[in-house]
Length: 165
Image 1 (tube, rainbow, N blue to C red):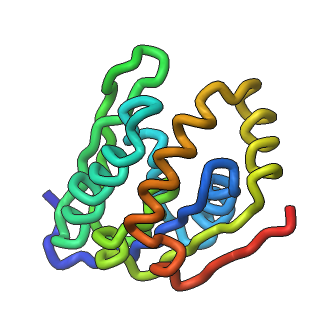
Image 2 (cartoon, one colour):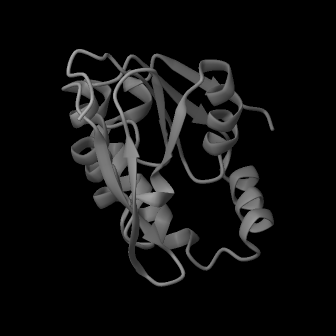
């Protein structure tokens, strides 16, 4: 186990599907020397936004806040089950990005949080470009609406980034 005194700087990046969370995280990570945790690795399938957010709190952020190793299992989307484990040692910087990253519980453990805004038409087009279809859009959007209404995620953000494109 790592040094219990190590402080990990935490950055949360959230926004609705297709808003650019992963792109922003991947651009910032090298500048900070940060490890990126994608919530896509934590959702247990297309109905798992809430479970993925809870896993990010329980398995990643809480251990790091206590100066302990964070260990979580990645979701294998092809096998439709959990796969390999990932380990993050405390210290340095960690970016947690994805829908559900910015909850009240996670915000309490983070140093900085960013909410990304982009209109639905552009977000949906990005999703189609990325995945080829959007059969999952309605199911996922319903989960986003419920989660963000309860958590009020945009209001928790240190920075709200409104994109034109």
